[in-house]
Amino acid sequence: MRSFEVPGFYRSPLISAIKQKRKAADKLKKDFQPTLLDLGSLQILLARHFGFCYGVENAIEIAFRTLDENPDKRIFLLSEMIHNPQVNADLTSRGIRFLQDTKGNQLIPFESLNAEDIVLIPAFGTTLEIESILKKIGIRLESYNTTCPFVEKVWNRSESIAQKAYTIVIHGKPTHEETRATFSHAAAQGPAVVVKDMQQAARLARYICQEAGQEEFETEFSGQYSSGFRIDQHFRRIGVVNQTTMLAAETQAIADFLKEQVRSIYPEPDAVADTRDTLCYATSDNQSAVMGMLDTEADMAIVVGGYNSSNTSHLFELCAEKLPTFYVDGPDRIENATTIHHYDFHAGQDTTTHDFLPKKDIIRVLVTSGASCPDATVERILEKLAGFYERSLPYSDWQ
Image (cartoon, rainbow, N blue to C red; front, side):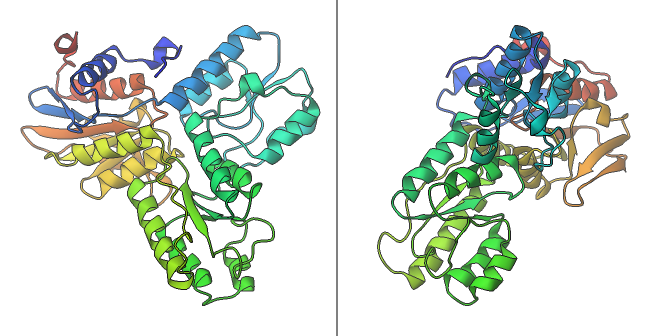
């Protein structure tokens, strides 16, 4: 896999060294046990896999190269490059402006653009409709499209099975940029519908099994199905794909469940397409690493990443099922040895916890981060934790 030119201020010498040593000792990525940083009274257990993935590094390289090569041009991002506040702040500080927010609401009218402007497509991709608007203005997208190849893989899979007369069922967050893009590409090929979780998949089964009608479907799944979708026609053959950052276990459970529902009504052997899992490798590795990390004894966990990052939120969910878990987007959120400001994922708001570090002779803290979080951010959090115990990170151990 190729390497990318990512600004050095996103790198961490310590974490890079740890990752290189783990990779050399485990080339097939079979070992998901965490890395122990033993600081005496503080023991930090780093997940086997975390941080920037292929798609994120590719997007960052293109964005910074575009800035360097076009100092006199107006440069826009369609929406956030990736879901990380530091990276997006770095780009806007250099003059890049967002055309839309993460929900697709317009911040700068497309009509204000001209053919000389540069528009970067984010790693999540975009819809065919927006691509068409930009191309009509005369904006060149080819050199500035940072869509992750693993997202494009899902689009290609959707196209392939749609051409065989399958309806595409997309497991994803309906308002997420990637799911909106995948839905657009899938719907251009055939009927498509989005389900956000197992609960909604169970609701969809009512329509598959003809327990509820077309009008109720259109109300309940408003904005989540393609034009002309008919429940009496388009559930006879389905294929399930997903937003690449969803929980692997949930996608598999939804696919198995819907497969069972379709075959109970339409028992033809080819009623369900063999789509296989369409998670990206980094999402899969990071989730497996968290599961391996959770097999070890610990007192608490810290998950680092943007609060609107889908893949990071799922890492938080996995950790929070077992341990007190704090979701932070940077070291400044840890105010001191007693106070941490963190994101309450379930309430969707910031919160503050006092006395968050256990009162023990030795505490064990699990640490991981999302695929859009710089390693340098994680290192600064580790340094902060170590400082509370008057310890230094063991850089010499990994040189």
